[in-house]
Image (tube, rainbow, N blue to C red; front, side):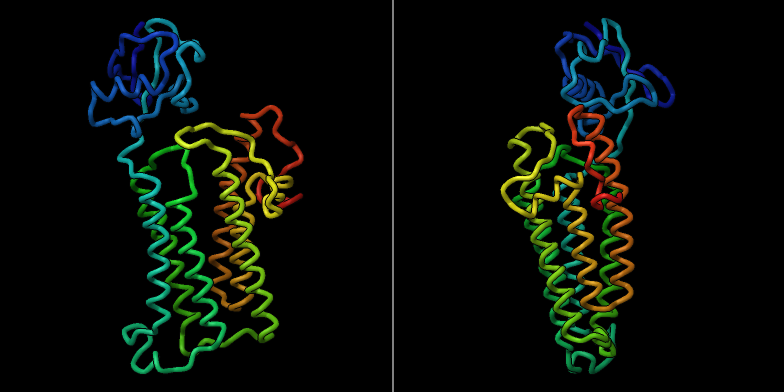
Length: 304
């Protein structure tokens, strides 16, 4: 059995893959195509049934896709790839280091004598919260997350790092500034914000563990996310992406605690991006699983 490979944009014939059977998968085709075109290693390849169709999953078979002898698949180059773990470690290590640099109030940023000025208690607490959040993200990347795709486009590492690193510098500059003014409502506001932050961080971690347990090691199996015995995971009963909800809530707490406008802007930007991701995941769940709970919303219970 043979399958013809054509370019998704130009329609040009690129190769003919032979020695296949109806049980051959898209991954088998990727492996064979990479032998013909070594530049396009499997993680860099995407195949479609139509030039602008949906990207096919690696586990799908020719038989299931109704591809016959001399059938046709359309190839798209995803560009140079980099591992998800590398991307996440780069994204999250930067904010951790950058924030702590500002926290020391170096003279090249704040001027001579800045580091000798007293720190408000909330400034120290904020540094601890920021450090905890990104240290947690680094550890989750190494020991908790299981990725359905091994890689992502290498350009994303620059785009994402610019976002995280840039906002870190903006927030850290103002919170750690010698002229920073603590919240107007004093300790009550600080403790309320800190309590919200800690609650949300625990919720976020709990959901990440629940999502990890959905996917057996070494597989790309997808299941309907469901609550487990951990009360923090019960938010799965209301939204498809409770990890995003908790993430936003953590930065709401940080913003309340510091009463810092750049922190609020970071929270709003993060909420917008996570809402886009959550809505896309929610739509995919509804399409993929016929018995997916229709009562769930994407990220904010009952609203969004």
